[in-house]
Image (cartoon, rainbow, N blue to C red; front, top):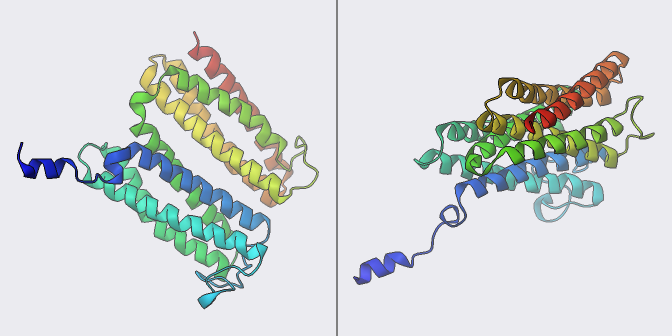
Length: 283
């Protein structure tokens, strides 16, 4: 064996070569979810403007780069994690685009996520410099769109590892998470008397869980089952989960009786769809 080949054998491998693209994508998804929840925490605690409308700086330290108090820390930490999430999204997109082994659908999803990232950054800045409810909502739903695309992309790259057991597991997680979502909502069926920052953070965590569980169950079910009725039922869970997520946020922002009732009806339909999916998938 030549010295050149020996040298090439011991060269350090890249992180992607060492851990795999699918692990990079899973880590990116976790960072995206964490960024969303930290943003919710900043909003719920009224910390969105705590950095004195400075962006990207805050209100203390050299060049105002650091937080001056606890409310400022919430906003600063949200931006800090968002920065790493952005870098991870860009890295995932470049890796997917350059790798010939990555599914082109995955590459398209993560590249689109990379394209939306500067838009999301701009909207995040606008929530500090302008702070209107329309901008705040657009900032949130753009984040949910990026999260959804990365859930789909991550499910695609883990396709070979997913089985019918994962379908039932995802449906079970969704069925368990749904009552918590309703209980934490400011509706008549909710058990919370005050919609505190902690309650908001928990509900939005459950929202992300519902969306991810329904997508994983639907996609894996389409791959592993030939039962068209079951596949249609699983697809319905994704549609209903997105509708429940939307109405769950609207009930917080508008306190409309009509929207509350529609939210409860769709949540009940989603619970039935989860339960029916579990039962049908076991047959």
